[in-house]
Image (cartoon, rainbow, N blue to C red):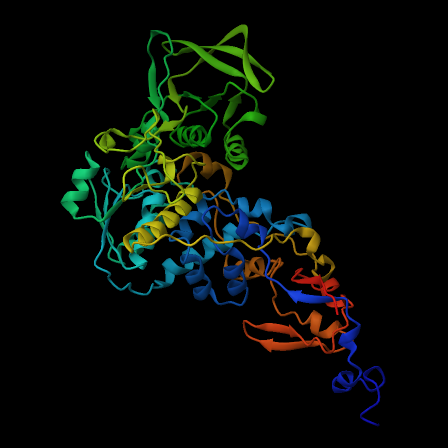
Length: 545
């Protein structure tokens, strides 16, 4: 056949050049990376899609290393994070969201099991003091260490971990998992001084020869409330109660009584109620002044508490205590606010646990010039997370933000990078994010139905009576399957659809990270490649010829 015959007849790509089909074009396809909604929502700043892609290839250690670029506590976070990434996951609009936290937990557990190592950092000769070993402090110390800075940490308690250890019960976070991930951070050269409380931050910086410091002591002071008491019964704050339950070598020594009441509606109240149940309380009642719609506790926390037999008295507030009798007033919701009704009732309880929120301790900051501290211990910081005192940074529960492990880990990373820039006499360059990859960009008919893998749960009887871990992890088969449910929203995964559907063979396979390119001498701008891209990677851009 004559080689000059048009491409449409010969099906030989080279012949299209003679006809300059690209000259017909009024629009052109452009490959763009778009921001997956999971990545956009993660307050720890993880590149979730990247490590899911590696995990679905069975490259578990590489996937773990990708997680560790942003988060030093994947086994912990896979258990404690409320996974807002899954709420945002586009797959949730197709069938069910990818169980991202379960895959992260699997990678974290594999790292502990197989003793995966991190590359040793190169020392820079600078030193940073970190106050507090909760998620924010540990994250900051970890990232600083990987950047080559010497880090020393102060922990007032006898063990590191902050509220992860003393606020999150063991049925949610086993201590051997937390200890293993803390030990890995220490293996990078991070020094943790336990049983060492900071009483004067500037003096401590001077003693340690620190070039900068990060404040991350968390919110461990329970908020106070005045409740009239004719005869005081046994009243504890939730933080102290949970700490006692965590510290006690023999939990049978903790006597909670037959009936326990918890005053509050946050996650700490749920933890206290579920812990009291495990310590032998026959009846555990949460008293909350608003309704379920306005409850600050995460829905999964409430759901699991109810499963375990915890009772919730909605729209009730405590007015008075008289021994084992608690007088409560019924409330109603008007314009989103709880309003008293003047109707009273009595609840009997052997113990009352107050879970009304926590404040941060700030006495050790009293001599710091330029520092702005609110009455609840919250410290004012600039966009770099630096306080009003040069070289002193803060994060986690000490600054205005959501009080979650994930947010705290993200603060630690952000602070570490800004501290690194500060010690180099520089400022971090502003970063721009790619456009979001919404569900509407995807061609979901390319994806088959794949129901979400369910994590096995401990049986209800053991959940109510032991501190064994409530939720178990995925095995390798399920973790691999779950990772492969990712739709790769907004980013090319080399499915070759564009290459296969192009009528002019204008798509060039480059391979590797380059993936594909368009030969504009062939492309006539039909848009078929963009229309058939499963992940919504290709944009059609107007072009004047």
